[in-house]
Length: 159
Image (tube, rainbow, N blue to C red; front, side, top):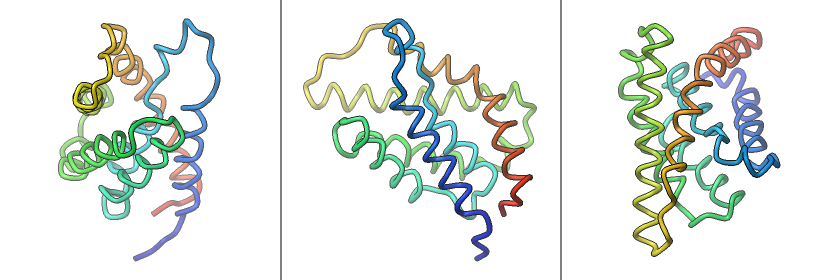
């Protein structure tokens, strides 16, 4: 297996993790995109032979530790998103960008739904309707994330 550009992939996940903990004003916190999930979806689409469920699990554990959530909460969600993305990558990649955005919306909603289920199972109070704004905001950013990461992948010849 060629590991060309592995440090670029790791760097993009580090940037996504940093964007998760970036301080935002109170009014903007509910609009914080799911940066890690967007990066994971991109890399699973671009390099399904290298990035998959294991990467989703590892990045999810890092996200759990970084955000102080229940250990395994994000791991489960990101692993499931990675699995579905890798399984459907050949179909999703041929979609135009607007249709890809719809597929990404479904994946983001699935991760959020799973996190909501875990919150309920652990006895935490479920959030209000503003909880569902995050996947919508993230979906609006998908074309920008896709083009940016694609340009980075091509510039550094990540294979």
